[in-house]
Length: 341
Image (cartoon, rainbow, N blue to C red):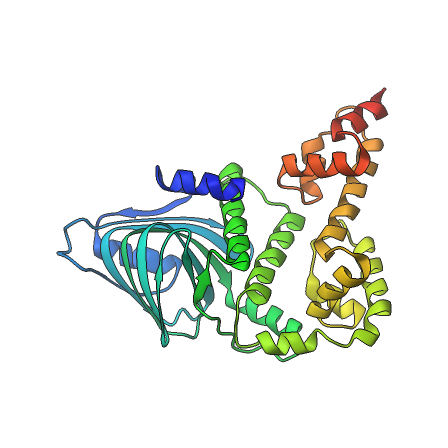
C-alpha cells in the first residue's frame, strides 16, 4: 500500500478530508439536495429513516481545470437518485461506510479498500449510502470523450464505462493511489494555492490514462485495434521524441503529441515502452530533470529550488529530489551551491 493511500486511510477514520475546501455542511435534507445539486447535478435525496433522524451532509470540493477532487459524506442511510449525470464522469472511492449502487443494469456494493464505482454521464444511477464517506473524482465529460476519440481513431461520442472498479486489482490500486495523492496535494496547496499549468496537464493525462486504459468501456476494443500500425512506429516515435524534447517545459498534451507523430495515442504509449524502454511520462521526467539541472547550474544566488521545480511541473518535492539525485548523483541544492561557489 502506498504512503498516500495509507495516509488517506488513516485520516478517513479520524476526520473529514479537504476541510479547507468546505462547500456544504448541513443536517437539513432539502438544503443538502439543493446545495450539493448545484455543485454536481440536480438529484433526489431521501433519508431511509425519518428526515430529522441521523441525517447530515458534508461536501468539500477542490476544483482544477477539467476535474475536481471531492469529499462527500452522509450520516445515516440516504437514497440518492441523480438519474443521468449528463455533464461529467464520477469515480467514487469509499473511505468509510458502504454504498449500494445501481448504474443501468449493473448493481454493486462499494466498500473501502474493496470496490469503488465509476458513473458514466449517460447511464441512469440510483444509490443508497449508509453512513458513507467517499473520495470522488469528477472529470469533465467532453474532456474524456475527446481523449477516447483520439485513442480510438473515431469521432467523439458517448463513452460508457463498466461501473465496477476492483480496488484489489492492479488498475484499481493504481487509481486509488493517484486519487489519494491528488487529495493530499490539494490539501497541501490549500484553497489559495496554485497548481502550475505543467502539473495540471500532467494530472489530466494521468487521470485520463487510468480511466481509458485501466477501466473497461465501450471503446476499449477500438482503442486496442487503433494501437497497431507497427510499421510506422519507429519514424513516428522519433518525431514524437523530438516534439516532446522541444516542448518539455509545456503542459503534456498526448493528443497533440499523437497528431505531431501521425499515430494514435495508444500506439504512441506502447511504442515508447517497446522502442525506448520507458513511458512517455518517464521520458518527459528525464527531460524536465535535465531542464532543472540546467537552470540550477546557471541559477542566481537567490534562486529558489522550490519555485523552479514547481514551474517545471514537480509537485512532490521529495520525489523530485530523489529522482534528481539518482540521475545526477547529487541533490538540487548541491548543484546550486556549486554554481554559487
